[in-house]
Length: 191
Image 1 (cartoon, rainbow, N blue to C red):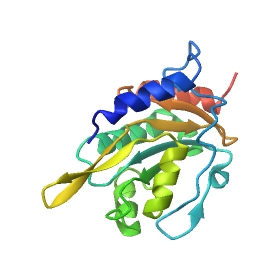
Image 2 (spheres, rainbow, N blue to C red):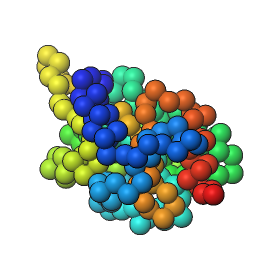
Image 3 (cartoon, helix red, strand yellow):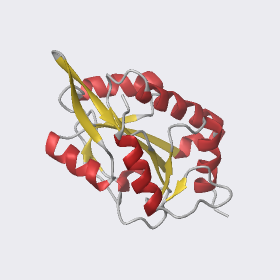
Image 4 (cartoon, rainbow, N blue to C red):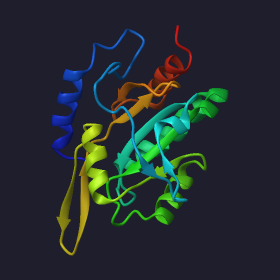
């Protein structure tokens, strides 16, 4: 579920980024002082950092597996982007970072991401490091009670790192898969 925090996150991101070059559909944040790395676990218990994906573009999204609409839409779009990239799709690593580690166990994450593409990777950590990672990436999220359970309100951006591991773009949720793919082609094949 995505609510009012998105607007604040969008404004803060837009204020930090440069004006997008004519060819980018997303927000160019090249040189941003945040989102430099992460240290999270994969479903097999291995600690992952950006260095693990050197040579690939990385598209990273923060969400939760019980999300009714935004997260599945983001991952369906990511699978379409990978397809649109053709052979370059092999040079794209999609990462889904959970903001709900209490429910998103390693097994749940593995099954969830594999349902969209077997190469997608779900990452998690404990509650404290989740909060630290979200702050490092300027991600908004909040637990929202819903009777006997809860849902998560969260921002809906995808972050793109170039093959050298530098944060380059924020892609908005309202952009299309062809727009995402066009931006990723530029990241994978800089002029």
